[in-house]
Amino acid sequence: AKELFLQMKDKNINPDVVTYTSVIRGFCYANDWKEAKCLFIDMMDQGVQPNVVSFNVIMAELCKNGKMDEASRLLELMILRGVKPNTSTYNTLIDGYCLTGKIDRARELFVSMDSNGCMHDVFTYNMLINGYCKTKDVEEANKPTVVTYSTLFLGLFQIHQVEHALKLFDEMRRNHVAGNTYVYTTFIDGLCKNGYIVEAVELFRTLRILKYELDIVSYSCLIDGLCKIRKLETAWELFQSLPRVGLMPNVLTYNIMIHGLCNDGQMDKAHDLFLDVEAKGVEPNFLIFNMLMLGFIRNNETSKVIELLHRIDKRNVMPDASILSIVVDLLVKNEISLNSIPHFKRHK
Image 1 (cartoon, rainbow, N blue to C red):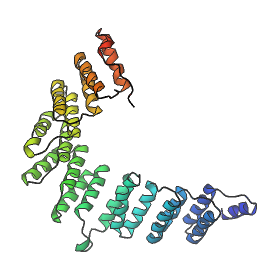
Image 2 (cartoon, helix red, strand yellow):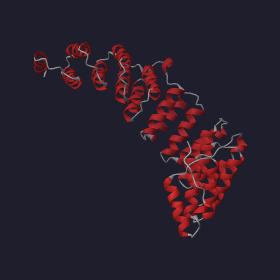
Image 3 (cartoon, rainbow, N blue to C red):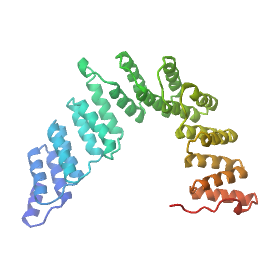
Image 4 (cartoon, rainbow, N blue to C red):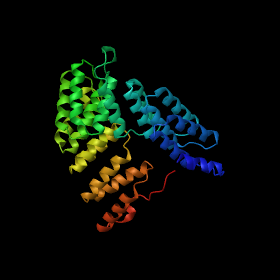
């Protein structure tokens, strides 16, 4: 490959970024870092702009060999040259830092991914979790903090490692690491999203007994989990308890509860709750309107459908075309004039 590449240059055939990257990758596979590095520099000297793949190939080689300072500088160069790092770039760096025991730096990169427009994937979480596990026996000063545990819980729930998360939660308590609202909310939400509702309820009750202050997000997560397993009575009791614990439902909490009631066919209760939303001065979003509309359509309650459409129109909101189509079919079926619904105009 090297000879062919040199022949191309001898014949004044200018290699493009794909050709350069392929040859650089070949040198990396052959553990010839010196040649790979020289070729990468030559590519830039020749005015060929490296792309994200080119940088990632070099990044992987640096991290594999524990050259993390160089890898960090390469990331800076990448950004300086206008090449946006992708998830693979960050994963490679995070793995490199974990392998060299620099967990704090790995976590900093992990946190920065969101602000840089990169999504975490299963590999990101696995690398960070493995990194923490490998350094579990470090000295007292470097024991995991509540922030560390929050990150790990989030990752474990994302990759559905619930049993591992439960064991880690026990470890956090054994290590006398004080939890906070964020870590408990993360844990309750993770349990609910993975179908461990009983465990989520038990944790919630324990925290309430121990007088931990939970916020509206914690309550909303548990109400959502209960609604999804059709424990509407328990969800409703929890929702009703909010004022007693000094919390007010927000639009997300209302969304969750109304959605649960609609799915359970409790349309009168859902509608009453919607009226409560408006009375409390909470601005209902379009999800609430959609859920109610579909529920009333299913029940063939045309008067409620028409009432909702007029409420939507007053808010200068354009309904979904698909829902409007269903409404028209409903009115035609019930021989009700289409003039009974607003003539929606697209609002700028």
